[in-house]
Length: 358
Ligand code: ZN
Ligand code: ZN
Image 1 (cartoon, rainbow, N blue to C red):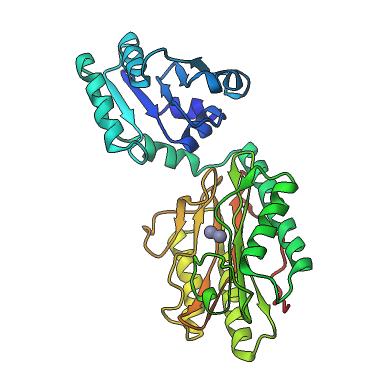
Image 2 (image 1 turned 90 degrees about the horizontal axis):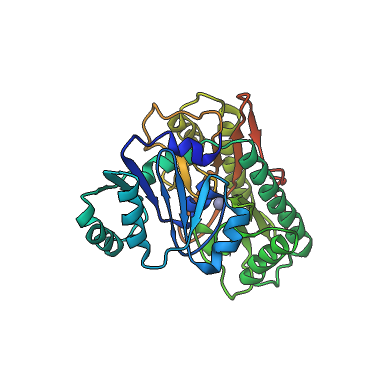
């Protein structure tokens, strides 16, 4: 079943849905465009855009969509289509539509009597958590490019590079090798900055100690997400212990990951390894997150999610424990895994996790 077919099954008679975000418009139509909307009824689907995108949309968008270039305003066209199809309720994308846009939409719809209500964002977040074969194939390519970029940077890395050079080399390599772009802003942070889980690469020579690189390619609309931590200089006994604790926490969660395992239990198992080694309070984020058309999506592997939330067939998640010692250094290791349609767990990430000293 296609994405748009799955989504249309969620709509009831009399309902229509307005999809506004770029990622959800891509997820449903398979077409990336930066102006316009999707308007979906249970049995019809329209892609609203303007002349700049119309021709490309005819070629690239899922055939289920009728391409329209409204002469007047987009919301004027939406109001007309809703009336023409007898819709009484319009579901909008509550996680994307701005308050200003919603006010304009509501004004346009006032004469039609159509009610607006949120909910599209939640429906799509639920559907997007389950990847099909085509999506898994795109993510395999995205991660292969990411692994290749790590091999590439290992050949280039010297202690005299700047953090920004490391980040740019990773990004340039992935683009050159066929990535559509980067999945998110590349992190390459060294020394004391490695203690910041989401530090920004600096115009500064690499500091001695840990260098954390968190990066990913985008391919076919889908993201990869990986972190590797290497050492600039030599690792002392304490750094080795910390690194091996993170690795052990990650391996514990990877070994435990299986179809039907609780997402919360996975986080707690990794956390127990880190706490047990004496680093209580130093793993300040969740164990992992879903990945897909966005780098952060459902489901979450977190101690804060309900124990009933399970890892299921089609889920793709990261497993990324870390230990961060404020003002000193930090380390994170991140792989991306999937529960395949046959229930087996697959690790997309092939890069080595041996402690590498540069
Ligand atoms: Zn990451
Ligand atoms: Zn991540």
